[in-house]
Image (cartoon, rainbow, N blue to C red; front, side):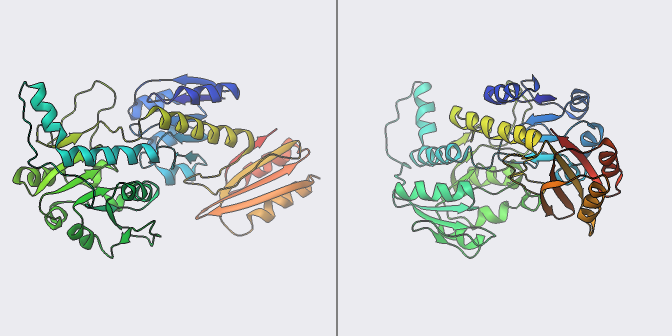
Length: 397
């Protein structure tokens, strides 16, 4: 089987897949739609980060593709529903770079509070500007976290250890850690906190949710961070609030439009504004995080191919399969309609196949049944493939 890894995925992923018997091709940058379609001919596993978009057109053309590994947190760059309809499983790394993002957020809060970028720039320009004006400790400040998931909640713990008072808002009911206080609305959080940091996911409903009205609600001379998704913030509105002095500083790691590869030109309305920290989407880009992401996602891809395991998939039913006691394992993805399991078992029984173990899981419109058998005739496999409900069938030996 062939695997294609794009966007400089960590070498550990390549090593793990090669050791598992895959033929692996690596490329350093992202591919556009036409390039990706051409590159996926004969490819079974695709590894990407955040820049490569797997569109419905790509999925339609990539008939050999069985699994996609997103070596990052987000999966909004993949057409997940269309992938599920074609039986293409998608994995990501929801936990591996959490600590790296948290540490960057803490570092940037301190940098902005002490106005270090301005002091650094002055010295590089030959100007000695030693004064305390506008420079503050973060101890005792009120931190407002929008999105209390894996990153937001860990940031809450670390920030509290540094003496920050933590407030958070999330659309879901989340358990507050430590002494953090939940706000009942985003407006309440914005009016309370002196530092606002966004850690929301990439769901379409979050597009453009933080704009002029939200910046106006923020306290005067507060700080703002976005290390989540570029499309959730109106950066023109942020620029206006920075230039007016209402917002005292900002740190931004993600942008609505980002260059495809290292060295490409970058343009943003936030450039050349004092006390603004701009970083090139490196929240999770530490050597430790990238190595762990490489291991985590590559292992998920390998286990899916070798055993059919779909644990922590984002678009298909999840089944944990540690091994198979029989000689063969039949992996059957199908539309989730009544009677499919009975049809599968009837076909196997008619061909004299004894089922030694079987598991079924469903998610929305997709069902996934795994049957361990000692032997199965080719005719039975063809009948299963011919079922109108069958999306994809594979036999692991």
